[in-house]
Length: 365
Ligand code: SF4
Image 1 (cartoon, protein in one colour):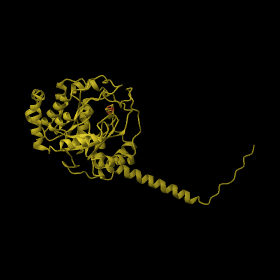
Image 2 (cartoon, rainbow, N blue to C red; image 1 turned 90 degrees about the horizontal axis):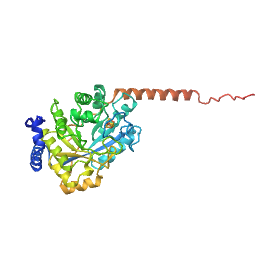
Image 3 (cartoon, helix red, strand yellow; image 1 turned 180 degrees about the vertical axis):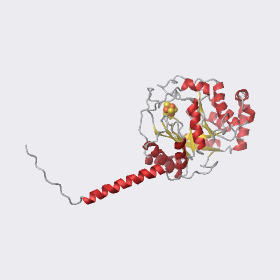
Image 4 (cartoon, protein in one colour; image 1 turned 135 degrees about the vertical axis):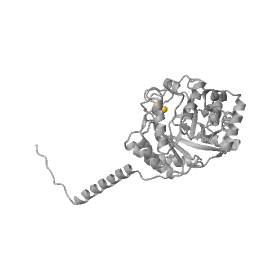
């Protein structure tokens, strides 16, 4: 059961969300146990492969160039450094690597070729590879799929109505199209939201209803609590109570029984008891590592300690689906062929002129 038809209206979802907390958690925990192993929690790592300088105006994001935050724009990381980071993440127990680039959309250029190579290389390490690169067309989605991309992340953030209050540089429809393009290419979809941006509970429910309206809901639904960053329009938002996070996780779990509900940004504001209730209520993934793109996250050791205390085990990669095969990318192959030909031509030209001594020129006034 991908969608729980008992809760597919605004009214029924609102009633569910507002149930007495422990009843809600119990119902979510019962549902979770039908479709998931409650002891397993996936550890994922989020790596910012291209930080800052983004042209968009997402009100919560310190990477938007127009906001005065302490995030500086950087160039795309190299393939080798991404692979190195992926190896570290894997050694530390992560089975999924999500690579994020602060782009409005993917462009067909050398940077995207490099991302394709990153996907191939990280998939070959045996990790689930997820990318979040902004808007994506069908061809780009196809290239990523062939490279071995497991999932594409593109959050709807909030309800269609509230979205306009947070972002003005692109439409909700644009987001839906990108999700559709990833879906068409056969890539698993990761899409979720942020609570605590000043939205009403109805907007949180509206977000879930948007996923209900999809032919296939996302396989992965991250639930984030806003991390209010100085310099962004949402800098003054008060942190939400952890009970709200628990309610949102539980409601999402019940509404989408098969999806992986990911407890994402904002964990630093939760204590271990709060996180334990989220796991009880069906969250089965956390992001590990001390940074979530550019915002703070609990240290790896703290998470390991929490797993030990709660009796949780890290979930292995590809437990729910097969590992994609990385195929050679024709554009990259062609580019490499041209580079090799050019290198060969240069070597031949050099060999031809070996032993050649340039004529001595004397300058006269
Ligand atoms: S959330 Fe993404 S698209 Fe929006 S400003 Fe930040 S980096 Fe850009």
